[in-house]
Length: 504
Image 1: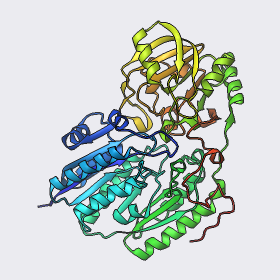
Image 2 (image 1 turned 90 degrees about the vertical axis):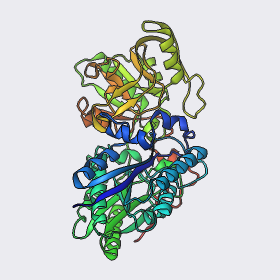
Image 3 (image 1 turned 180 degrees about the vertical axis):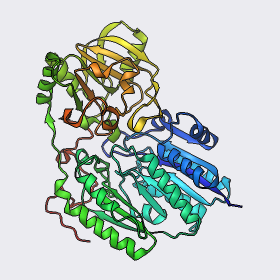
Image 4 (image 1 turned 120 degrees about the horizontal axis):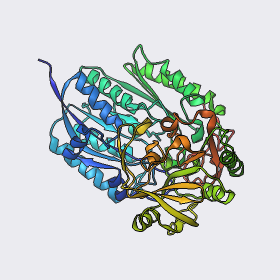
């Protein structure tokens, strides 16, 4: 009779922007903060809130083996600042307690991001792995998924048996990478012994050069995948999250193989290939003045194809507040019409709209109490045109099938522009951020999304790549790296230091 396994599941997912406000418990509670039976209940729900790496892992394990889910803690939120140390300590206390109380387990699967920092702890991901390893011991398999923007530390590689990074950006392959971990874990439970090799490159590519549909990142990931097989279990290339601004910054190559020497050899080869392509990772943005002209032309001429403008410098998916008003102000002043912008993080504006009700006109004050850099105030005559409790199920891309919660949200009409204002911070992953209010995206002349790149998997049914414009405005997530006030990133590093050299 086949053996039944007890496998602990959980994780901690945060991408920390070193220049953004501290990430709080309240942020996690509004997104994903589940433990024990609550985690299992969400996992079994029709539209879970948990990361799809976990759903992918469990679905594949169900196919492969008879096993018992041992739930730990799953804490996950979109990119923000360093996590509040007191809250992170609480998460670790709960994770340790639940794992100890569970008794012996056969394996552990963790859904991690890999680019977290805390207000004190510089490597929370390493802390998670260390805590788990101290309880389960050196012989229990520990496998985990990582974002392809992980800032990987040596401790993370040493303490986990296998780390598997996403290979697609937008991250539509998260369930697949969770399934990969299930297969690797099953092989380990049957006796396979993995060896990992780790190479860190002094290289932080700008975020706008990291799409994987095409371009340099797609090419280097594809090169890494040619090395899989013949004893090589996994090749993961993490570009890193440059705006983390930590000593862990830099592109990472992790190779897992059944032979240690083979892992080392392949890791050096892949890292050398990535380094040889570093000059291809560049960014090209369009000025706000030019974008305003383009949006105005679309407003005036219905024969022109509609355009999507990406506010890449204010991406909540990278730690931006999602509320800068540079584009809104310029478009409003120019008289742009047929436009929607969002989702904009402005709890006070959303609350006022709900209090006033649909049809009310008022002086719409954006960012009225905001003190974060770049989140400047903007005021204009507005009208409440739609309201929502903010709950919806995503239908495309990374959000497909997942329950998301904007909190109380509203559409405020400002001139010819519809602004989606929300209470909980999100990036524009999915058309439902607009469609839940009845906005017909297909009829818009222009759309402005607060996102760097994940929107591409959600809005590709409306906008081809040649109709997507990345706007050059200030923000906490600017891809123009020379404009970032670096504090902790290791130097020298390319492209900040163009003459940086590296050899395997």
